[in-house]
Length: 340
Ligand SMILES: Cc1cc2nc3c(=O)[nH]c(=O)nc-3n(C[C@H](O)[C@H](O)[C@H](O)COP(=O)(O)O)c2cc1C
Image 1 (tube, protein in one colour):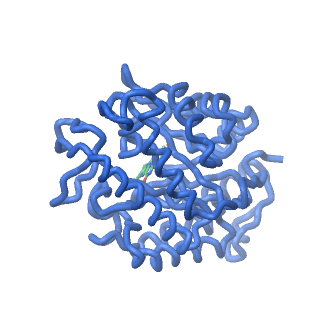
Image 2 (cartoon, protein in one colour):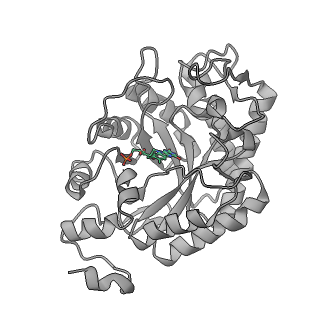
């Protein structure tokens, strides 16, 4: 039996297979962050294609937390209806669906807004120097995450992924490269993780206890003085009591460092996080082959596999993988003729 097609249950998140659609920004929302027909088609196609867990793209908890205009938003109750339409459609095909909640911090380029960060350091010379968040402003962003989690529940999402990776606001607090604060939010690992801790605590206040909560991390900062996978595992261990159920392991983007990218380049990071935290992980990065996914899962280097760009090339990747691995899976009736 293929491991990729072995169901897995995490809290009440009951997945028919271990294929996760990686969150991928579409920059296709309107200027107020509302869902468009594009999103509906994009996500429901992957549900029809047999993905076990769809992770919606980074969705901003605050208009000033968007990477740019075009990001989806969840800072207003009015966003719920559009998001719910995607959720309802994807569930019809047996997929489970989560939303990735985020704030871009110093990487926000939405016009007419001053970007914010733990410390006034620009990501690169192409970005503005951000405003250093006051403690009061930090609390406001924590509340924005809590309200976004409540709206996510209203939209019917099966899970939430807190985006702590890729150099966005949470990662900016976690990394010593971007967090030079002298107060209780900076310095030691215990202090740098405080913002994430407060967010997890706030989200857990409103998110159904039976539902899984995911955390995406950049395991490696790829720069001297930055976090390594071992450091990231240490940070996760400091907050996992807030019921993180699954860690989605990515890497980089806190500074414009060069990354040596090759098939499976992040799998060792997943292995380290999994070993040092005892939490299940989603592993991925340049995975295109079902056999490679199988190897990672069978050798316990991750518990699920995320697929990003290959699912953009082929929304029916799971159907193709099942055929390649000679697995019986349920095909949409309309497509059964292509099964043999
Ligand atoms: C178009 C595109 C948009 C992305 N947007 C997000 C995002 O919203 N959130 C996130 O955590 N990662 C994002 N990523 C990173 C992917 O989730 C994934 O980690 C990356 O593409 C590596 O996996 P792959 O080699 O299977 O594509 C994006 C990647 C792509 C290609």
